[in-house]
Length: 309
Image (cartoon, rainbow, N blue to C red; front, side, top):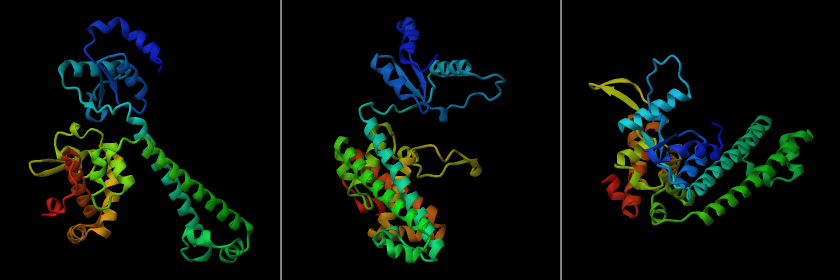
């Protein structure tokens, strides 16, 4: 069927009295379908394709065999399902994600400008230093070719424009985000400011969907993806399972906390001495994610003694 809600609804209507469940696979374009079905009181669940391993010996697989396989799992009661983020909160969460996209674009523009100045001068000029220079001073620093001055001016204008857009994104997120008590608690976590607190709050959603703190830490990509048997490594599992935005938020929080929280710095240095910086960062991010789980669940501020003893 085409991706048109009226067609889907018309096709399902004759079967409504005996439908036990409607399974929608969690692909990138499920919002319109799940929302439309839920609005009409269909029993919808979101299948988690990352946790479904269909028999790979099938010689001819298509949408029909996939649907039959999902139906069989649902009948047996073993269908892995995902979380359907509330429709009313989803636009605000996605708005914050778009802000991250604009930030990455600005960072790319800044690095491009700094690399150009480094190639031309052999010196590492920051973009703010270039902005403070007059047109005459930029020509003296970068060279007398007008193309270099033109590129510098245009890229600086773009950076300024993107910076202004980022502020507008932030204001819009704060305008619509329903700041729950968890938000105020998260602000007490070392290294977490307004944006990181919003990120953790919006990406986590209902903390009750995580049965244990280990489930949440795994969802935040703060644990190793390993496969062991009888104490021996049997390979690597999918390390990309989980939420990339939460993984970024906790690593970013750790980088800031290292400058302001001495116990965090001491823990990090000990881990670096034993392994390396990347693993030390992830280990501290795992501690931060566990702290955030209990802070959100219990509506309590950060307690340094509980984290490090």
